[in-house]
Length: 421
Image (cartoon, one colour):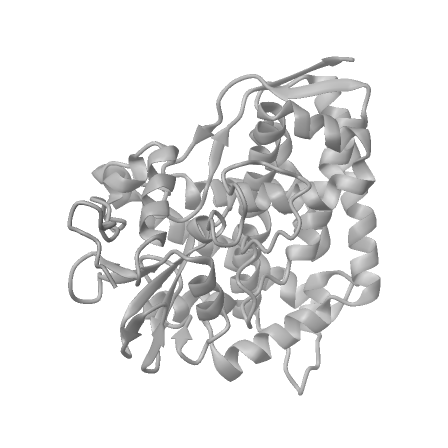
């Protein structure tokens, strides 16, 4: 067989000249980052970034690799932490450990307590509440005519739903919302040295305050259960187990990120996408019940609210053509997996009829698949139903103000307007 000449041979793919561990990469335009991930997906094996030692990691960028690592918790462990930096041992001791950082029996016990607390009665009440909250927020939006979609609509919807579900009294909510803002105000890669130095103190104070609030509510609900989620969690008897006050505080903090931040960002990206793709918007409006599920999944795939989570290799294994040893760090880049050309035809297109759509926006399956995915879908469907079926034309009127972050695809603000059709 004749071998190809040097001139006609196809050169092997080259590693793009980027460093995913460098904050400067996350300040690049979004298109440049997506192009870098596309180049990385063409390589034969995951690439290491960040140099040697604990700060270095292998980037899992292909859909198949992220999916497999998600479903192999014995090889790719969530402990000691899925975020960067990993939570300190003393912080876990003081504030409790989040379920996302647990493995094995410890994680299974916590997930069992939480999942069984979501009784059919509680879920039915939550579904009705989601519709009521969406209608009320849109009524207020039409009456008050705000100009920022994030602050007036997208932030409020999931926060109010979670607080109603948990049973957080109204007089606690304003302060909790302020504490959440304090804990997250400097997340991103643009913040300067002063902000980086100030953030830990403010964030820890915010967490400490929320722990005190939840401890107080836990004591009250143990004495007088009210049928809300806090009552179910602290009064549960799952193999003799219920959540302690500290565990409840850690779970509530997780809900504020997994249940509020991500849904808020997906809603904001959703409005921007539907505005930028009027054909898809028109299709959704033409038969909302038919296309709503597909629209929600495509918004989540296209925007990918959580960009990445970290894993620690717990046992020697091979994945994606790379050998991994215990102690290696790997990062699961959902934002790249959701644009994988091997899985999604024309992956950069926004198509609410995409079928199948096996996106990894709620994780890749396995024990850490998002418990709140169904609730998040309900919230998005209820809100967009109210926004798109009223006799008002609502659309974004400017570019979304995005936060440069390696962790979440956050929208700081989105200008919008609406008028009578």
